[in-house]
Image (cartoon, rainbow, N blue to C red; front, side, top):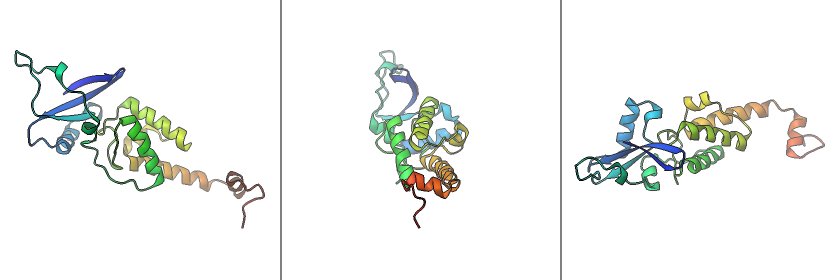
Length: 178
């Protein structure tokens, strides 16, 4: 494993795997069972061999920069189930710099950090007008989990509106049309 800072100010843990039987999702799942979330690698890179210095030590400077394909190797892509999930997935793809993300993929296992989690929660609040707390997010750090909190909050907000409030939001100044 190595800590990389390929983008100024953004450090991430990268695991480099060697071997024909190294299956990234299995290794990632195994690591998740033993490491705290903040210690999990953001990305796993499969190599044919580790680059070595003339003295036989790992040449950390020669380790490759993770590609988008490396980042997507373990995202467990599954289709989003709602428009809210699709919007959340868009935010996650942008923050995590991946093209695909699964609705049940753990944010941190997909490469998220504490900082990017805070950025994501801010973007969610801006987009939906509803705040998901850090505690709620850490209890369910998946697209499906965040969507469930948002849907519950949005339903509660709608249920609290009067008929006049609904009419005003729908642009019907005369009241709710019946």
